[in-house]
Picture: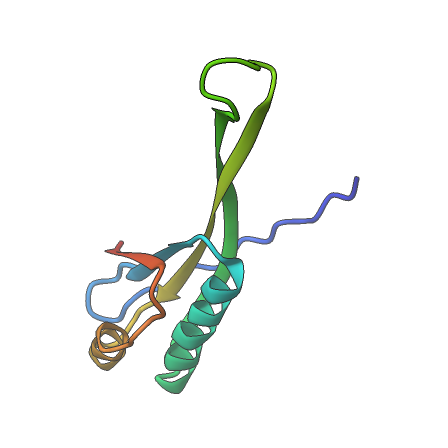
Amino acid sequence: MTVKAITATPKVKSPKTGEENKLRIRLRAYEHKILDMSIKQIMDVAERYEAKVLGPVPLPTDIKKYTVNRATFVYKNAREQFEMRIHKRMLDIVNPSQKLVEALTNLTLPSGVDIDVKMM
């Protein structure tokens, strides 16, 4: 097992209030390819407006398992298992500008991607 060193990023202070503003974006999807594609779209928009992006950070995958009997009445030992995997990623955008926020709201993501945006 290898251990990676975690380096802390310095906090960026906004010139007006002296506090750090972050836009935290959490994305969830059943397919990881669509999720990575939508993260790339968000990062391209952020690079276009010259914003500092931290991430993407992969979060733990939720796995929901369902066990179903194959037969309705007999053969209790004959069962099938199905599972759904929910992949999650997180992005932080430090000190976003108003134009960047407007561009992100107008961004069209593929269907099946759930997005949560918080201002911190």
